[in-house]
Image (tube, rainbow, N blue to C red; front, side):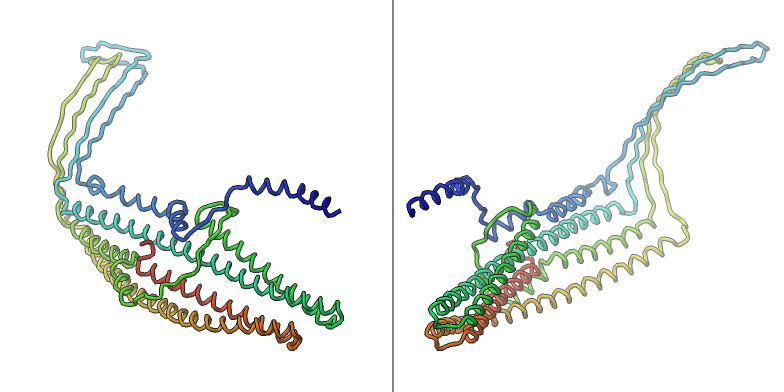
Length: 439
């Protein structure tokens, strides 16, 4: 009988074994792999890179009006008309449905030689806009990398929570087995057995909820990587926090490299250049112009049946603004106000940045303190579990005492996991603020 059962079980396991053999291996991700995938596939980063290209394309001498322009223009017309012409001596000439056509072509040349140095200012503005585009893209990249890193370590801490709840379930299983055995031999009550069953089911439900949160975290992580939500992967890392972060070094790095701060400085520079560009409108503008024209007309009636002209012209045009209702003065004043606004925004951002660094560093140091404290608490809690479980086996401890010790151990381990996770989040935030997150 046992032999037959074994053979049937073996036959039933063959399809599952073959399926496991044919299944594709599950992807294992490290934080470095995750960041690299985000830089390659994250849609926010792709959009930022393409937006940066706009400003890079505009940074040219042609767009700043340094180079001349040449335009070609061509026209061909045809007409059909009835014509009656009377000469001085009274001769009359009539043409019905007379056809005529005209062909003309011209090349127009224009080159701004002097415009009050506006073209030089415009080129400097384009340079600043190009740098601003790069810094805007850097902001999106660093923010996306921070989100990916936070999501990655969120998966790790949820895996650790699943492991903690699984350990708690194992203890509940041991208690349930002991209560069942005691009840079956008559040395324990059915009430203790049923209570153990309820606590086991409660811990199992809590484990299922933790597994559900872990799966949702993985779906979010795949979204950040620009992948299908059901792509399976595992993370093997643990949460390791750098405990040697120096606040002064971070603050100095942030003031030098933070892209938000650099972008605010670019905006200040652009506001200054706007003022210069408006002031330059007070100066005259000198253009060199020229054109070459060719035209030919053919008609079926009239004294001149064919006419052709071609030639070129060249010259210079000087434009001098005299009075425009003091509009330039108004615009200069507004541009100066915008300069002040940009300067205030830069100063406010510096204060905000230093405050954010200080807050993140406070979270970082407090979390490290809690990590060390909860590690000690967890060691004690695990010892208490071993003692309480042994006392329960010997019958000198009640189920309520064992359950309370078990709850304390789970709560302690959960606090430790949360403290480690919060410390890592604070570390990531400090790296983002100091623009060192993708080093």
